[in-house]
Image (cartoon, rainbow, N blue to C red; front, side, top):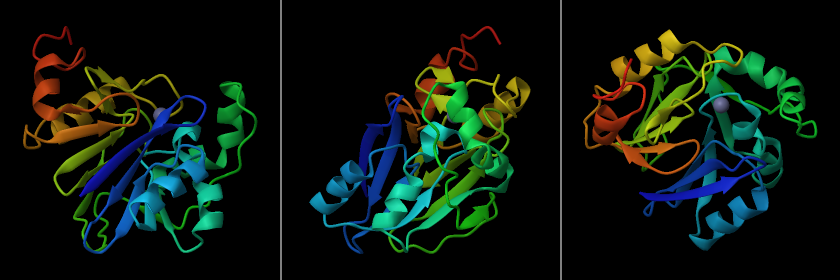
Length: 212
Ligand SMILES: [Zn+2]
């Protein structure tokens, strides 16, 4: 599987391009900004974009959705129903962060952790991980984890925004992520990659030496 990381948008949130070498199909994890840059990266590898899996409804992760759908009208956009309210209120979110207003992203299908996907070359499992937002989803795809704003390198997502909860994110990370194969690579929504093993040891909140 090809995995490309593009930090885009006003606060450099990561868009991930995942490509299958055989089927030449591609999916995005989040769509965080400049869609021409995303298109260029897809074209470089001759990939056809078929779907966008959103980790949650914060503006910096969904900003590019409507623009990319203008280039790829058939692409399907997925998000957890629990974060619909965040998408609907995207203008409020943008104002809060001093960003010029953005449009409500067009969602094609609401999903949860029981949803099944059939995209050749990709074995996709959505994992419900509330805490950063109510509808936060992590995606385990071909054995690699895309953790959105739930788990970062040595850090966790903030819990003080609308729908956030520290006790929920603790349950999500300890109960749903730290139980995965510890060799699992983790691709977060901001910053550098990590692994489950590394976070079990070194995470500032829930690692072995943390104070929580
Ligand atoms: Zn977020």
